[in-house]
Amino acid sequence: MGLRDRIAAELTAALHGGDLELERYAAPPGDPGLFGITPADPAWRVHGQATGMLTGGFAALMLQSLHPLAMAGVDQYSDFRADPVGRLNGTVRFITTTTFGSAPAAREVIGLVRRIHTRVHGTAPDGRPYRADDPDLLTWVHTAEVSSFLAGHQAYAPRPHRLTPAECDTYYRQAAPVAEELGAREVPRTAFEVEGYLTRMRPRLHATPAALDSVRFLRAFGRTPQERLAVRLLSNASTGLLPDWARTELGIRRPAPVRVCWDRPLATALGRTLEWGLGPSQIQAAARGRLAGAGQG
Image (cartoon, rainbow, N blue to C red; front, top):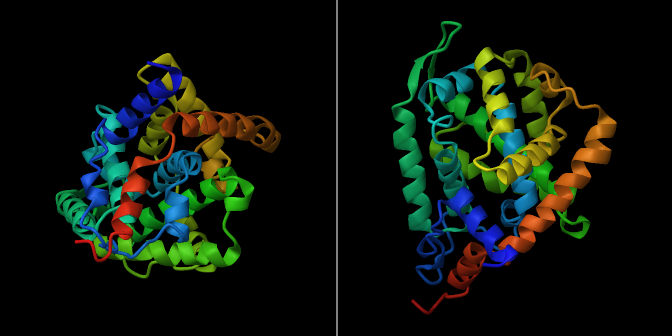
């Protein structure tokens, strides 16, 4: 097996569990998907750019951890420490299916997540009750996630493929219905609304011991030396996508010159290598075939 094949096999196993389940994306012919996202749309472009999604995904997990109630649910219920790859597989499957999949496949994964959320509830260390299906908590998780994905895309997509300000607003509008299907409410739909939302949330956010522990675990993860190196480079780069106050809360001390002159070039080089190894996305190709199949079913 050559280098490119090894990279593709390892990434497919790490991100998708080894099975792309292309039937989720390829059929039925002509199905527009639950949210009508096409290859020209910002949501397709952002969620289809590997380096931006990898760095943005790490940043999203760090930012989400700063909500004490969201972190309590993860700490008390998630198996991310025992099975981090399985947890990653589930997250990737949800994002790819709701973006590129057929409407039935998207409804299936949304229903699965909603059922899981009903079972996640308890009391945070500060004594406050929490529920994973709380609409306000769902809005936080979604907004932290999509703002991080977009930041990753804008930092790591080739310059001609980055979004204009108007396209950034379109991205947020296209992503919002996914959160609403899960039960979120008052979801920000423009960059201005996202900025205002994060500003309003700031007083509620701080790093709990569980948050600090989860970030340490995340940045040190890896089943092999090569995987640990890749995670370290990508997670270092992801800290540059966080707001300054979030890095301060998490105790991350990486000066701006290090983030710009060291972390970003290394992550860019690694990302290009991983993208080369993956080759053209089979998932996106299957989705394009389904979208082009109107009238064939």
